[in-house]
Amino acid sequence: MYSLLLAIIYVAFVSLGLPDSLIGAGWPVMHRDLDVPVAFAGIVTMIIAGGTILSSLASERVTRRFGAGLVTAVSVGLTAAALVGFSVSDSFWMLCLWAIPFGLGAGAVDAALNNYVALHYAARHMNWLHSFWGLGASISPFIMSYVLTAELGWSSAYLIVGVIQAALTFVLLVSLPLWGKVNPRIPDDHAAEAEPSGKGGLHVPLAGALRIPGVVSILIAFFAYCALETTVILWASTWLVTDRGVTPATAAAFASLFLLGITAGRFLAGFLADRLGDRRLIRGGFATVGLGVVMLALPVQTDALALAGLVLAGLGCAPIYPAIIHSTPVNFGRRNSQAIIGIQMAAAYTGSTFAPPLFGALSAWAGMWVFPLFLGVLVVLGLLMSERLNRLVARRGRVGQPAP
Image (cartoon, rainbow, N blue to C red; front, side, top):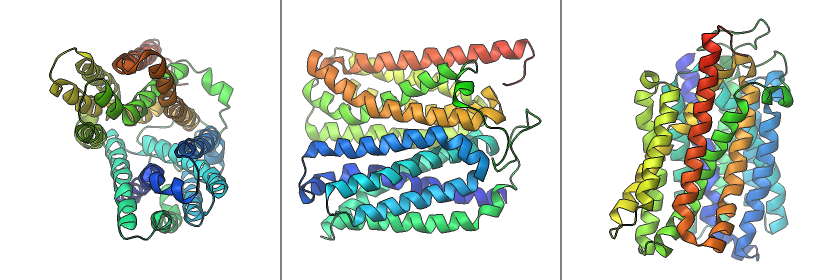
């Protein structure tokens, strides 16, 4: 049961990564076919982000009522329907309409699936699963490239990924009996604890979750990490070209290596996760990213140091996201984990959505040279807030208090 469901979840993470980079890969062609400006991509992604944030915040109540397995299956089905809707959209307003169920499905499945894995599987699997998500996100641009090269049209890429998601929905529905048969990795910490599938139990209100000591700290840390990651993904190439004078081709290659560093780093972190523990992975990850940012900022003539710093930053980023999620049940208790992970997802999407345009506005005013400084502030903020949570958890342990 354990291994079979885990294999299904691995496939699910690959499939969940597939849609995330489709819009970026296809938009140069899509905006011409839809007869809209290039900048309108931001409207679509903002709609998706808004739906994702809303469904993440609602995930705790929904998952407690219906269970993680059913929520995951329905949410993947919702994204499948949205992707098929994208494939038949011949106007921009239709694209915006289908972006709503896409965002709602993505947020709910992200929160439900991450919490289930945090409750039932070891830290190594959380890292490897997120590495598989990166694999899926890396595959979809190749799907878009193939259909465009074959002159099948960008809509074919959405249809292909939509069919894959629909097939996964069927597999998830068939696997529903397995979700309640996998024992949790940590014991119940409340009499009214949810059953292993995540169904039932007492609802944890948003306001109540935010009042738990340490929750605000980890939300800020998660916001800072996701803000940093997406800012690098969007702006690293531009900074390398405009501030360092690197050729566009070299800059693009090393910007992609940042993403590959995250994917490979999560795979490698999986072998060390159980031995080091989540806290050391988070601390070491932020410290490694900080070193990479320092290498970016050093005023040296050679570009090799900056390029190596970008790769190092990607490797440092790798374990932070999975470790924050995986440590949530231990830090705050199983009863609270679904609610807090849902809020964490909302904080993550908020950082991912607003930090890159914020840096864009800042760089337009002050200059692109502020790129390493902007990243440095986010690294320090994330590290300080995660360490503050560690001190709170350690203090609670010393006085013998159970998890909230």
